[in-house]
Length: 188
Image (tube, rainbow, N blue to C red; front, side):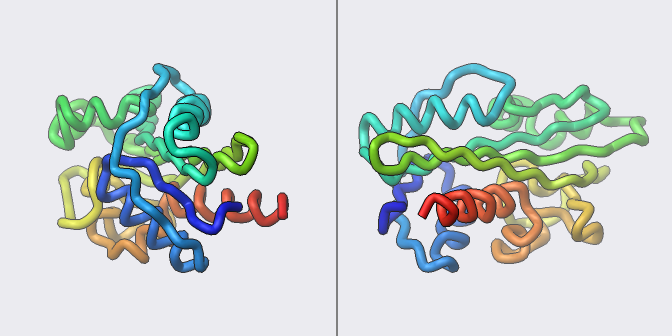
């Protein structure tokens, strides 16, 4: 693993969460605050693998790219990998409107990370957090759909009601980072 990980994202919330987790493991981080091309796909791992290849072409080894989505069971997994677009267009209120009168509010957040090691080797890790969609937005923290997602591991609060450290403990992104670190450690 490179001594410095270059996190490629234009999202300040992702930067904060990823860098704080990596720093807590003694890994220095650099923020490359840019967007990279994404391939359209229903598979988050395919999306990050493509985007990480694009990042590698521009910034070399040691780049890390993340993509995530909210998968709502009653909506057949929508918005899934299209979560960023859906958030920008219909937002929290739009998702809550789609779930009006729906009692089954199960959902999960999924995160896929791709780290490009020396020689261009891609290491992909995935993490998930099971939960439910609340009936209204709650909390001021986080970003995206955090104000309406209540994780099963901490059922009294939404992600937006948690500190960054608490969210990292329960979140899909936190699980993906922990898996990535295990994979990289196993590689030596």
